[in-house]
Image (tube, rainbow, N blue to C red; front, side):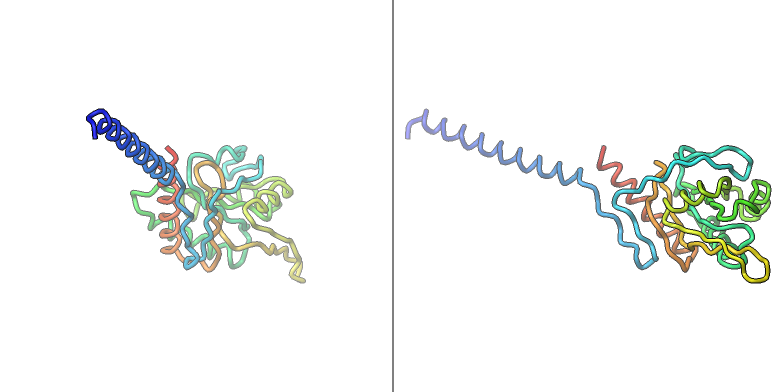
Length: 220
């Protein structure tokens, strides 16, 4: 074999090796950019959306009497619960559980907000919400306003509520009992079904947050 033939063969082998390495690199790069699948948190009654869901547009009133829209949910994680201040059972129990979870949030996690969407706007004035939520902590907030807007917002987080009379002239509201977790983009990242446990809420929140952060890093 002549020197020129050997040189040609060596060059061809180098080209083939370079192409092979390039293909391997591209495959590894594509795999690195692919998002991690949503964590399975079914053991904690939690369903995580692979693609977070958009919320409906809304204009409502906060417990401070200020106008609030969907844009105001951006920038923070928020646990949303649909209920009302005159609720005799599920609401105070759920709010108490959220307060416990709030007190157990590790310092290294972003501090979430807790938002009560009123299912009873006739009685849940901003003042009533402020007095009620003040018992639970500074991170607890509320929304009230037009009942159709509230109903549409509840629907967009997978909740419903229905008013009824208990037969003694008392207005009761039957409503969903789950929590919706809203991400800093203002979209619903997960649904957490009852029964709620404060330690499991913190654990689920941590895993959802870390999964979200990891996928954001993968996407560049």
